[in-house]
Image (cartoon, rainbow, N blue to C red; front, side, top):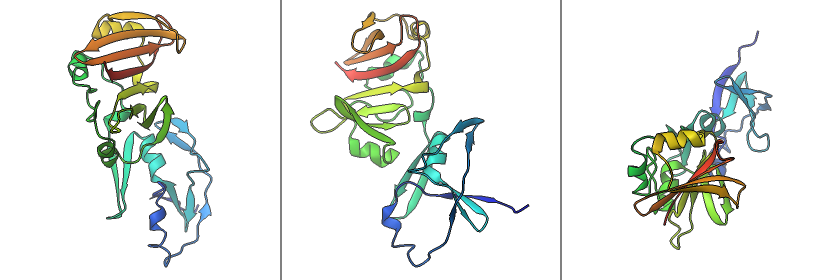
Length: 222
């Protein structure tokens, strides 16, 4: 059986590197492959990421692989450096006795950037966002963390955390951090909300029902 050796290709949109390798052209073929991360299947977007075979070596897109394993990928064009770093952004939102002490400063425990942080500083530290968009206000997202830049200077005006990162029930939230100041039907997004305050900041937990699972948590200034 022919031995297949696994390698990594960058796969994060490095258009600036084309000239660097123009004199060292290599021939490759597309390699059909399925990915399992800790036993769970995940499909790579064929329009964005491809797997290549070169002389029996299989090269996979580093951004897809690293982010699927919970790491951030950054590329510094000046030094041609690829950085892969572990991050708390891919871990479950910490709800504990310290939750409100961080919220009172506009922050989330374990995450270095909070309300008022500069957009450029965030991108410099975390790399290009995995997704951009707008929910009334433009946002950048890394994993399940959505940073909204609604202030005039484009600093962070709100942070929303969703997905598996907030896999708590309404009962869990109340048991861990206590009862809310207010709660009720969420008329905007058809669910249930819990409302808390700490210092100058507000926290909303939005759930799918009164005793259901949390969809997302939002932190913003009053």
